[in-house]
Every structure is written in structure tokens, then in C-alpha cells.
Amino acid sequence: MAPDIRLRNIEQAPAPVGHYSHTATAGGLVFISGQLPLAADGTPRCEAPFEEQAQLVLQNIESCLACAGVTKQHLVSVRVYITDINLWPVFNRIYAAWIGEHRPSRAVAGVAQLHYGAALEIEAVALSE
Image (cartoon, rainbow, N blue to C red; front, side):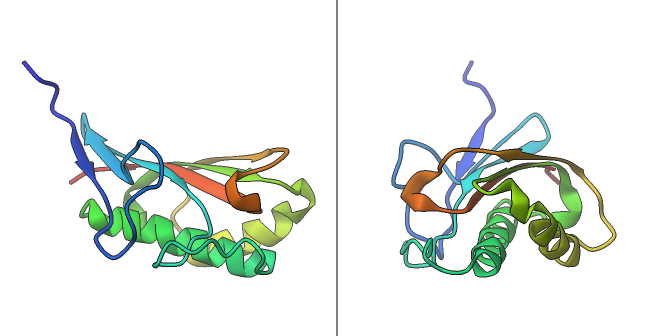
């Protein structure tokens, strides 16, 4: 018997460039692949200021959630990879404004580099409906 896993890609965004899906839903959870600051047409926006990159990545996370039929209020865990940990307070402010009163578990890890030279990447897990 095949496992009950539903793989989805965002219709309004280009297909993933690697061998993965934007989201995978299984066992009552939605797993969102790492999102980078990519425009809807797939163009990397990694030269943009950090604040703009962060907003774009969060928009992409929200698009992935919508693709899976849930909202950011369904998030249970968020993992953030950031190339300059000194920007953590800036990210935290942007994230708090985006997520509101909801406070899922979260980790923020400093990393040496990310694909396309992005300043941050976010992956997440949400409850499915």
C-alpha cells in the first residue's frame, strides 16, 4: 500500500528548480520546503535589501500555506536560516508583524551561505485541515 502523501506546487509560482515539491502533506501535517527570496516568476531577489528579502520569503511561505489549504495560524514550527545573525532583531520584527499573536515554535540559525546568495531561507510545518 502506497503511503498517503500529497505533494503540491504553488500554481502562481514557477516549478521548483530542484527535485522537491513546495509542500508535502502527510499524517495531518503540511511540510513546507525551504523558501528563498524568489519573485513569482522565479527570479532571485537576493540583491534586494534584507527587509525586502524577508518580506518576500514570508509571502512565499504564505503562498505555500494557501496552496495546501491552510493559513499561517496553522503553523506549528518555523525554521529560519540567516547568513548574518546580526540581522536577527530585524527579522524578528518583520516576522512578528507578519505572524501576529500566533507564536509557533521557531529556530533561527546562522549559516555561511544560501542558494543564489540569499540572506535567508525559511522552512515550516503546519497542521493540515
